[in-house]
Length: 283
Picture 1 (cartoon, rainbow, N blue to C red):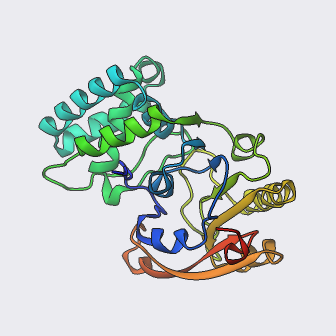
Picture 2: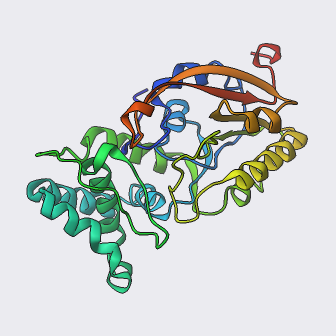
Picture 3: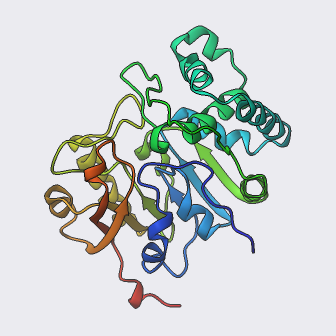
């Protein structure tokens, strides 16, 4: 089976540690939940027939929904072709600044907004997605003379996967997105990461701080109590180790390339936390 792959570069994306994640995925499960789907690397790799995916980033979720509509999908690609042809620093800022005019931005078609999201992701500095307190995209130009915004075959594969299976797409709070999860379901949490120092987490205008990490741990424990399989990725920090001390904490090494400070890119310790031992599961 040909599997899709992420169509955007997302901070904390999981493609380069997929092999490590797959070692801890349950052998069998019912519905797959991913409350912080981002670029969807694990989703596309597993390609479950039934899934509930969610992200609090409205513009990202809009792209997923456009990919589920053949007509809008084609129109989005047409807009992207136009953006590629007109790409320049001046054009980038023209497209980026569309969200500064709130009333006009709301009137944009969903497929035009989807094209904007993908274009900015490909053309901005280091593929970063960041918004300010007004929810305005504020990453600077990436200084590329040309951009390739999409791979047609991959987008078709992703679109076919989303439309030919039972995939529910949400844009709600992570806790709300898993309210229907039941025994035997598999939930993979990949939240904005905790840090022992200040860190980037402005994927949405609300951010994701220490209190949110604590709320997430509470939800994790509730799901575990329901009999769900729960897996979570995060940085190997003192807070994360304290919050999940009653579960299986697997330390891995990962390479991170998205950081405004080049000296802070490179190998970092991350954790994969599970409420189950896969080796004790039936195959």
